Each structure stands twice: as C-alpha cells, then as structure tokens.
Image (cartoon, rainbow, N blue to C red; front, side, top):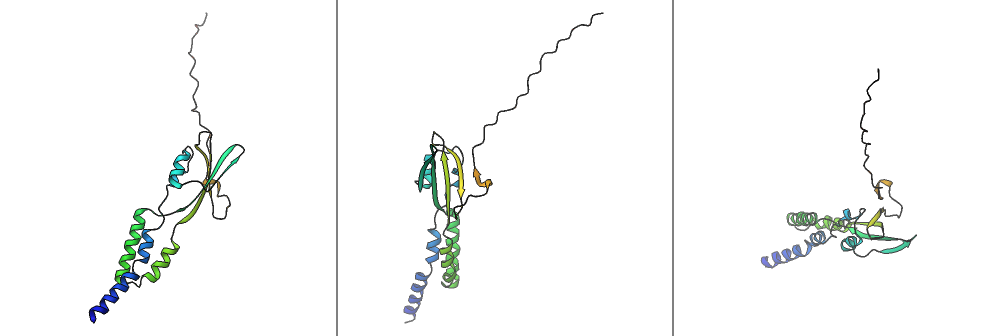
Amino acid sequence: MKFAKLGLIFFFFLMLSGCSVYMAAHQPSEKNVDLFKIGTPKSFLVAEFGQPTSTEIRDGKKYDIYRFTQGYSGGAKAGRAFAEEVADVFTLGIAEVITTPVETIADGNLVAYEVSYDKNDLVDQVILLTANGSLPPPSQIATPQAPSTPSVAPAPSPQTTVPKSQ
C-alpha cells in the first residue's frame, strides 16, 4: 500500500513538474537583428525572419515590414529550464505555481522593422517600429550615410629660387 501511495505521489510530481520546464525549453528562438543594417541583401532578411508581413511600393521604392517575436538564445532557454527543474525537485513541484505563470509571460517580445531597399535589393534604410506604431527616437533609425571622401591636401608646389640681381 505504501508503494502505491509513493508511486501515485511520484506520478503526480512528474505530471506537475515540467510544465514550466517544457515552456522554457520551447520559448521562441533569438533572431539575428544585426542583419537590419544598411547593405544587407533582402534574401538574408527573408532567410532569418521569413517573408515580410507587408510589402508596398512608395515613390518607386520597395518597403517591407518584418514582424516577429524576439526570443532567447539556446543557452538562456536551457538555463531557465534547468533552474526550473531543480526548483521543481527541491519543492516537490510546488515551484510550478510561480514558474509556469512566469514562463507564460516571458514568451519573447514582439518586434517590427520597416526596411527599404535600393535597386539591387540591398537594405538602404531601417526603422525600428514601436508597439504603438509610432516612430522611435532618431537614434534608432538607420539611414544611409554619404560616402566620405578622404581629404587630400594639395601637393606643395616646387619652390624655385631666383637669384637676386645686384
């Protein structure tokens, strides 16, 4: 009889523990947002973020909006899952009362970028869109810089000396 009770408790523990562990391990993956820079080919963006959520042409220029959930690195997900499993073991599953809601809330951040391209389908402008659709501060807008031309000092002209007449 005692073994049956222990088995039932162990089964209940296994069923209860692991919900947040599973959720932590299956959170969205981290995307490489460093690709949102001037000069990146459109094909690189599509490979990392999928097809844009919208595309339009304004004044003969193509604009795409990429919208995705920015997740977590593999190490961060594994670390959270491990910590939650340890908490489950030491609390006999009671930690799930806290860790499951935390994992429900910590499911990544919704991010959107507006990108425009030059005639070669290379990124020439990037704007990080905020959640309410307003424009971000100018420090978060990447615009093309005019190529700088190195300043070259004029070469000195050869000095000629004219002898003084007496």
